[in-house]
Image (cartoon, rainbow, N blue to C red; front, side, top):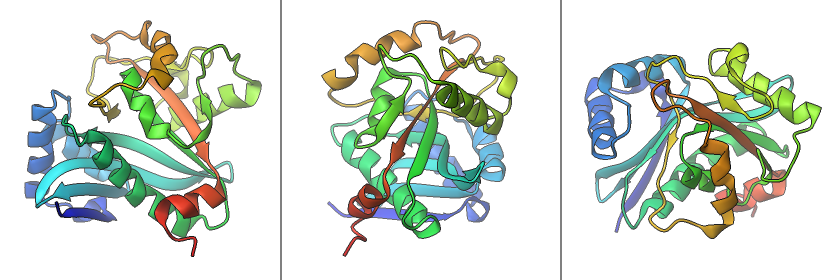
Length: 225
């Protein structure tokens, strides 16, 4: 199987490419229609997509930026097809994102943040450290501050509960990481309670983040030689 990972500026995405993304979202029962994706093209800076034998199997809109001086990968939208190869597609998307992060922030630890609606999507933080929220862990003041910082980047600091990390929706389509593992990992079973307060009618999401260390970032991308 031929796997192609492509990363480019969102601004160069064609309407045809957005349409293919919307078709994939519809197949995956995600909320990302052509209208929303057109707005995402304007809101985010980078897009990575994955094709297997020429077929689109996943994509992500995101940005690399410093928040208070801290390097971060902020994921606005991530979608992976529902299939036995979903995990491989997810890792290919992360490879594209992390390669850009390594080039932008060499020798630095990088925060990775996203909004989630399903516990399975915590797999996007695999091999990262200090994942928040964490079962049985009382968030520190700095961790709560990061929830507010990310919420501000996602549109409104006032809509996040910095103790539960729930980002309240207003009924409109919002970006999140739409990833369903083919086989759910028991490692994240205890994280499921974080999603209990979410209202699907309001389109609530859970803000989550973790850190990838500089040395792991280089190893993951294969650029540590």
